[in-house]
Image (cartoon, rainbow, N blue to C red; front, side):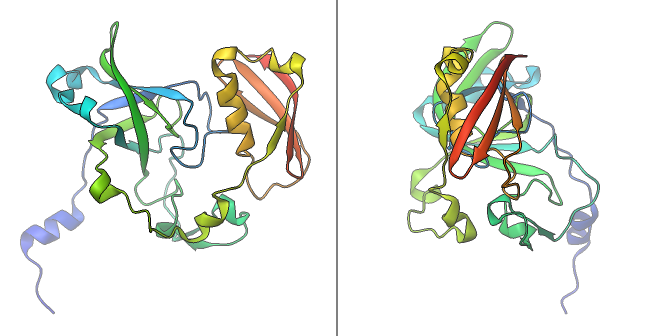
Length: 239
């Protein structure tokens, strides 16, 4: 066996320190209800706000030429000690284990996530410098971002790709029923986003009962039940 160089041994054993360069700002107040993948909520916008030391105009020069971006971020709300080589993906009902590296589970050796988002525009915000307005993010408000990279269609897009067990979940959705009175309690500016979130069934997939679930988004808390393929909103209250 070839002997490892001293430098190779050092790399294997050293701790790599990374600093968040930005954070996300949106109306996701908690983990419950966040889309399981990026790009599923195309009608919801988020802001990528850079930390003070990275608010250089030059750092974003040319970014408007890209329609989509990659966000590299930290699962800051799912931190735990240790990791497991197998996990239970929600879309497999929570009963079947597969290898952690065959999933996008947050419970990994390094709690790093990636998301493909659409760049809607670059704005200048008071006290925040230049920010990126993106759509399709699957990050909770305040999530630390490690890096922003352009999406390159000739190398990053693979139309022929096979997505394993995730392919079966691609067309899954629920019918959302919400009376006019309850619907009117949801601010119009994000009403369509809320209904899109609910149609994707935010419940843990291994829960197929008719219990009540509550999801917080923006300024409201929505309580609902699910029976078969129909999700019914039973209460909407202000937070």
